Amino acid sequence: MVRIASTPDKDTILAMGQPMNGRIHTVAALLAGVAIVSSAFHFWPFENSSAWQILCPANMAVLIWSVVLAGYILLKRGRWTGASLLPHLGVFAYLCINALSAAFAPDLSRTISFTIKLAIMLVGGYALFSSAISSTGSLQMVYRLTIATVMISVSYCLIARFGFKSGNFGFYGNAYKYGTYVGMLAPLCGAYLFLSTRVLKRLLGATLVTGALISSGSLGAVMAIAAGMAAAAIVTPGWSVRVWIIGCLVCGVGLLTLLGSSSAVAPLSNDITLAEKDGINLKQRYIEWQAEINLMEERSITGTAAGCINEYRSNFYYRLPKLNTLGAFDQNGWLAMGAETGIVGLVCFCWIVAYYFKLAYAQAVAAIHDKPRTARRFAVANFAGLIAASIANLFSSVHYNGVLITFVLVLALISRTKLLFGRVVNADNKIH
Image 1 (cartoon, rainbow, N blue to C red):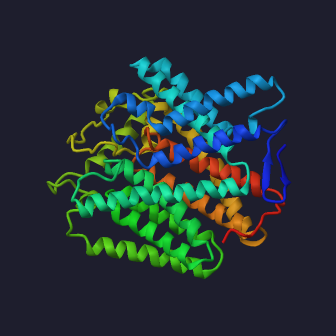
Image 2: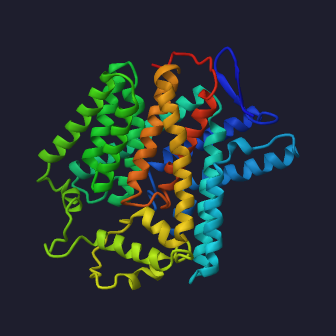
Image 3: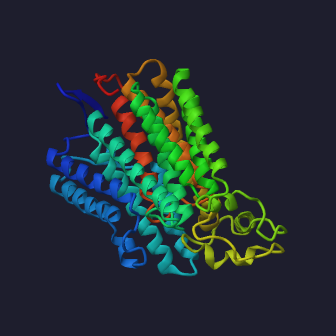
């Protein structure tokens, strides 16, 4: 059972059993800050190093916290349980399916490695963010760090592409991974800022979302941002916020149209077309989707095994042309997941998304009438972020290394907001 205890300054979550030591919370907050801020830099400055891709700051923060938390639990010897810090049961079911798929893996080491990395991030990363968010103040700090991080990423991308005519997308380099990253976080941060009563913060939100749209080089990013902001407009009370959101989207799309001839937005112009450059064939992306559907139909129970889709996919094009024009990380995460882990694996992941969608939507609806403004901002932002992540996963998987950490952050934010505002909370309304 989770209860919320009021203190003179803030409302603190006390987890089941003995509450966690304050110094451990501080360690968690520091590591969570490192993970959030470093996510903007992706694998910079050693993009081509395989070791750095595993040991980059965001991943190391999760690994360190996993060890710290495990040691803390062992030292307490049953006097404290971390059950409230763990993700929903669907996450463990999904991980089990990934592990069991190793029985059908053409490359056992790849499947085991993929599953371990997935488990560390989905469980360890989730526990890290959950441990760091112990009060309304710490929850607000996570949002502030996330906003600053997205601003850094978007600003660098805009400067690189429009100022230096670079072909890279900020620190991410790749249009699809960058699109998934900003596609998830720009709506979350934008909605949070738009629900402020301060005009300057709303202007900051408009700048962030518009900048994210202009810097996008993929259809997935544009659709994710638009869907996330539309979701925020639907659940938010009052037309003033809706006008800001609609105006921001109109400005962003309008600027993209005006800049259509610019080389900086050319990748987006090419990405939104349905046909290849030859004008004859359907875009390879959608041919790939059909091949994955064929694969799921043929191997609906076993899949290809986690991480092994490339071993089989070429055999399932049938009469469709394999043009070899697909860009790196241009992948439908939903179909790829089903192809790798079968229908059961896809259902388990849908279970995860559906559970957190239900939480986020319930929070957003409840916050309209009987919750403080603080809760409203968090709830609407979380809902926007989850909708955006679901759309982004159509065009580049949220499972990719360097991107998964942000998806886990969205899930943890939804869960901790529920703990903070699920009951009657004496929240201070000083957050404007």
